[in-house]
Image (cartoon, rainbow, N blue to C red; front, side, top):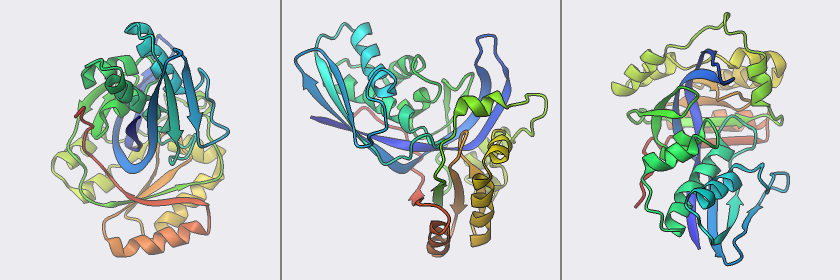
Length: 288
């Protein structure tokens, strides 16, 4: 039985440039992985079937599941006759803007690359990942990166400066499609992506905090006032900078001094059940 870790991601920036001819949006995002992770286990089956099991009963285990799609893709492309049982031990909140499903799919690509001895590079796995979903290519690599096009073109970036990340997810789920459907391309306050990249390259924590930005945040906050409340409380309790990740509803705060972490964590627990005090990972996955 093989095991792969599937870490969550947060957006340091998320920008939407325009609507593409293929129906997707052209995006520009700086993302980094954090040490909140699902565990994905793989066991060979002799009957050729793909079987997905999960610790969360409301998560689909058929073709709607991205991990299932990842296994199906590799089976088809490389004519694999063996089956696989995929066990998703979930820790990442679902429909939270943290790429939990995408990371599970990426972990499945890496895990089955080992289980089925395909000997594929991360670059090749990322090409396959682009067929599954926009965040899956980034999740194949992990670490910190600029993602462009529809999210599948990945440029590696330096690890962010050391800090704590306080994640808080209100008890609502947000549809990414709904948020993008409410997006007005002509009326966006674009984040300073170049400034964020410079902050990472110079390991400048203050600049990183100052250049956090997400064009989807105002849309989600308008539809879900719980996100507004979380942002306000996180700032009130002492986070250095606060932003919503992805299409939400998860909000995170960056905290440089560990002594502030308990106050923010405990304070937020009064407003929502799912609160996590974690660190950034920032380093890419390897195939070793």
